[in-house]
Length: 216
Image (cartoon, rainbow, N blue to C red; front, side):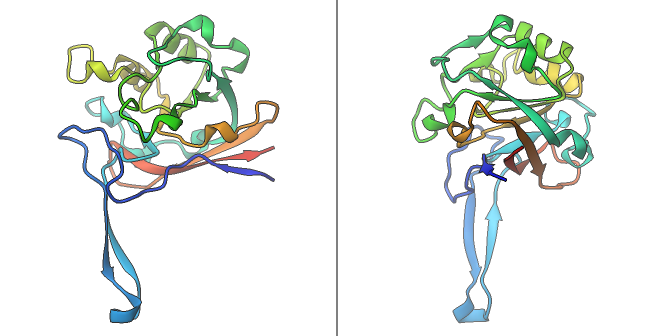
């Protein structure tokens, strides 16, 4: 069966959200085959580096960590919502979400990953309105993945209404995966299963994860 890898490469110096609470990514050689008979590396990265999954504790005081999320929710049939027609700064409203596709697991395909190497990646990506988020939750969605850096506007960081969609999803037990890549490889005429498995970092607010689609 066909496999599509939707996971970014972890690369030293890769782009991150440039805030004080996001670590720079570093990969350094510690041992080489020539010197010590084996090759090893030190990998330094934040819990929200590259393709990653958020845990409720990212925004909710006392929320559960990444290691306690339900594995069954992260794996299984997924519906693809093609929003690739969205232009920069698009605000996704409920009428833009096909109700027939709002299943337990959904993937929002914007094609925004193609902006990864540009300065626009963190600025003008499409976001969800709260009304769209409510429609998603009321439809019974428990897992949402996207090829943008966030379902919320980056402009609201540290403001009073910072990341309301994140908080609403977490309060309703919806798992969030961000920074998907390669979504243009998805065939709209095919059905897929998704597998999104984060590093099992105890009590962490998030973790990098490998995300793949398997053609059914």
